[in-house]
Length: 201
Length: 112
Image (spheres, rainbow over the protein chains, first blue to last red):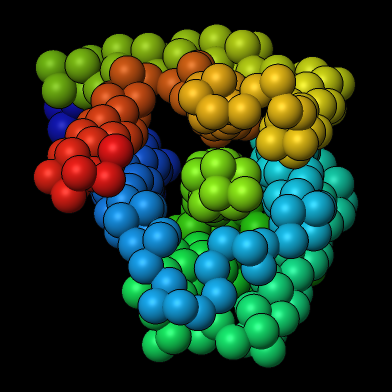
């Protein structure tokens, strides 16, 4: 009797607090695993076409010092993200908000750098349709940039939710899951920076 | 009976969470990890300009440094080192699939 009563009590809340969260986290890891394959395909494609410039510009356009600075910014955004998660776990709403906003700003700085780099490359004659090299380069780095942009929007949404007191609402994406996504974006860039930039100069 | 099993599972989960909380690095350790990552990045950037590493040593060194940075972020910032094996397996399956596809594609087109 007691068992039945306990089991029947508020099944929705019980499900929310003990079943859904691990499922969402599992789903995020599955998603990140699938993203590994996605970016693996893009990087393979870039390496296949890295020398097919059709007489147009190629890897000599790369400005490694500038890209290194962008990489450093994105790497440090992983630090601010993990500090946000740490503060979130300690229920420190103010610190969580500060680090979330800091991460979003660092992500925005990286995006600004990427837009500047693309603009420079287009000015030098490398466009999406110039050559297979151009297509592969813009597709790979462009898709990564889109992932960063989505991450910045999610971080901004989290920051806004923190002001309205809904950051601890357990029904949607939370700081931990967005943190996983953000760190993934960072590790993808670690690979792109090494394989696309450093190994080609 | 069902409730008893649920209570045991919840207690185990709570214990795992509690243990995981204590296993996570402290903020000071996160700063130290970030410093190490920054130093590794500086070394990476310097490697192409050092003529002694020209050729295959440069490739091995850069890929090695990149792999160390990758592993540090995944293990310590994403907490995969402290997570359930299930999460680690899902991620490693994807990563292994990506590496396998990478090798197969480049070998097929003789680009490796």
